[in-house]
Length: 155
Image (cartoon, rainbow, N blue to C red; front, side, top):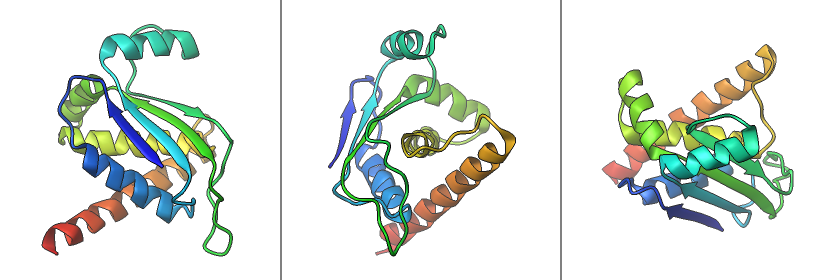
């Protein structure tokens, strides 16, 4: 089950975030019965989490909290159901980043949610090779989702 809870005070398309997460999990061959929480919080709440978990001041864009250490599966061996964990996104920070990047808030929300999901599934970007792999997969997932959304709107 995918649970999306918006406590941020920012109006975002939660149904689209749900479709994104479902798309990403299907592409990564993770059971649709896996549990994931996506929490949207304001800057004050994100600042508290950032200090508590990363020992860094101020709000950040996304934090990930993996639970069962599930990893992506394959078509032949999908990841079983389990507790993936939590993704926490701050739409206020995302709004500023979207403006700087020259795209809309939802595009930034999609990017941050996918980024957070990849962290929940064990990906990292501390080393150059890890960064290439994670960011390449992130681009691939976002591109595939954009294509799926275009098809959905035409249908």
